[in-house]
Amino acid sequence: MRYLQQNLVSEFSLNGQSKLREVKILIAGAGGLGTPAATYLTAMGIGTLGIADFDVIQQTNLHRQFAFSPADIGKLKTKVLSAVLTKQNPDIQIRCHNVKLTEENAVSIVKDYDLICDCTDNVTTRLLLDKVCKGLDKKLIYGAVRGWQGYITILHGNSQIGLTDIFRESDLIFESENNCNVSGVISTICGIIGSQQANEAIKIILGLQSNLDGAIFCFDGLTCNSKILRVKKIEK
Image (tube, rainbow, N blue to C red):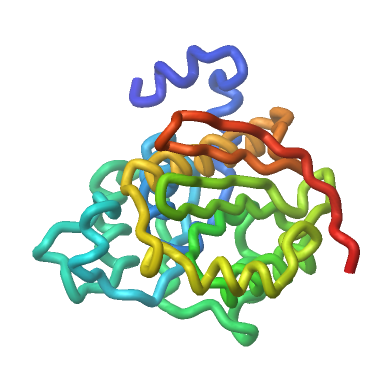
């Protein structure tokens, strides 16, 4: 009965629920994007959810990372989030990776998952995930937020486009230096983009065509305008 409403959707059905139970998804980053993405995937009954993050909860996280409370400040994000999610749906398996993703450990962690959600906020980890997912032939659902804006794209899918195929590394570094710690972020934008990442993950699991494979979804929360931009590989 738990999944009745989603099973009634024609594209989903009982067969879709069975597919979800068999899938392993890694959420890289347990922050503003990772919290909603992990929460929806957990609620929908994903088989195994991995959470990779080495950070501890700070007071400035609380405005957008709704799984955490003031009593959690100073605790590991992975530990607190996994406890909340286990209480929400005790039927799924949750794995915590309480480490920073590095060249030494990223392959061994990522290889055990079918699908990766990049919910991180630093360029070094983003570039590393992009490289590892390309090498392991894993689809990567990339999400980013800043101010009122949010972006999503699917990397290493049918279009065979990676992060450095559409952005120069210098541009990624510039954006990283102007992240939400500098430019700020509206919490609802994190919720929208993180939820969209979970939505794209579900579509991939169900075998549904995504128009974000080879394109970027851009959302402006200030104007409520959105657009999808087709991308092509930049000249290097």
